[in-house]
Amino acid sequence: MSDNEIAELQRQQAEIARRLTETMGAESQPNLHSPNIDSPQLHAHRETLVRKRIHQTSTLLPYCHRALDNEFEKYFREFALAHHFNSVDAIRLDALHFANWLAAKARPIPWLASCIRLDRTRIEIQHSTRWGVKILRLDYALHHWKLDQSQPNKKATVWIFLNSGSKLRVWLWP
Amino acid sequence: MGNKFSFATLPMLGVGIGYRQPFRNQLFLQRTAIDFLELVADHFFSISLSSQDELACLQRNFPTIPHGLALSLGSADGLDPVYTKHFVQLLNSLQPAWCSDHIAFTRANGIDIGHLTPLPKTRASLRVLRHNITAFQDQSPIPLLLENITEPFRYHDDQYGDADFLCEICEQNNVGILMDVTNLFINSQNYRFDPITFLHRLPRERLVQLHFVGARYTEGQWHDAHSTPTQEEIWQLLTEVVKYGSVKGIILERDLNIPDLSELVPELQRARTILEEFG
View (cartoon, rainbow over the protein chains, first blue to last red):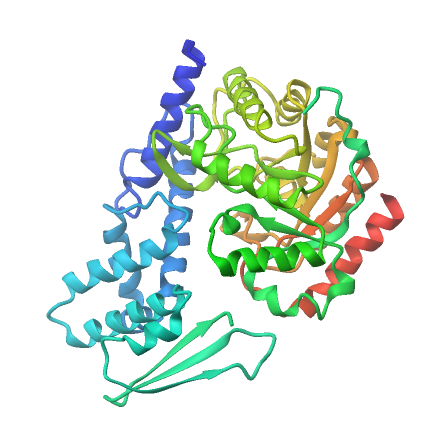
């Protein structure tokens, strides 16, 4: 595949990929003009992609999402300007890196820092095949934990009770 | 795969669902409603024991069809050797009746877009598809079906119409069609063409499998949300596709807002009735 038509297609695809990812999340509309595609349609598609990432990330970071409310989307769009992951594990990486990015940004806000820490812990437990060991090695002072599998057709719930009085709920597939 | 492969010889699989984790513990409660499962191939590339156990359990109990999300057959950069290797290993392990991916690209210049992106309907795209499909089929003899996607944008330099492009893909390659009825409905509404006229241009013996689910209408456009019950217009279109094609399998593809599996059984039963009556 080396003739001009193929080279042009390759260039066009690279340009579309760059425009759909590198500038993802920009509040102002960057130049998405392409001679072969309607700019508003491409912009709408980019917006769909970033909304999909916001939805997926908010699912993985429920404490942060609840704490930040509408600000969550604003922060994520800022984060997405410079971050895009090329991996089958991109959803989890997005959430973990966004949590780290948020932690650096939110140092002066102590309550948000604790939400970030709880969410990060949830993700680590949820994605660990040895989640029981993970719980025992938590950074938190652990009081006790229990596994609730009372609904056989649903996800199991792990309740983690911390010495501080906080409790953490993690859903797992048993 | 030889050039004379006839898709008419593929087995009839019936009606099933796109397997998602939330269905895991309910599958056997609804066993009689599900003839086969379509697995997202990418979810089973992991070599973890739990993933392999899950796959083995599904394989023991259901006919399974792997469906790829990121083979990126339309990518002018060629196939990703790592992804292709994983896909082929999965096919070797499952030995399914067929496998499928999309008419799209998801990767360019080392960037993974994370979404199915449409191709321009040009000679160059056809050449790229032919090159990549041949490279894939050189590694696996399992029959390959290609799925139509929703098109969030279109190119001004298209050299083929929608049906002509799909016909050319079938003409130039030994592939069948996985017709996503919902995507066909969405594109026909958003770009204002008649889906039945489109359908009747296609080679009927290549129409092997169908996807369906509800579509969502917002801000003047139809969207492929995979999150709602199937609308009546989509049922009507599905019936027309079954009447016209040589459909061997129908999959309900629900990804978001996933209800209890028992709530999806009436949709599966309706699809089965259509397949039995008109297939």
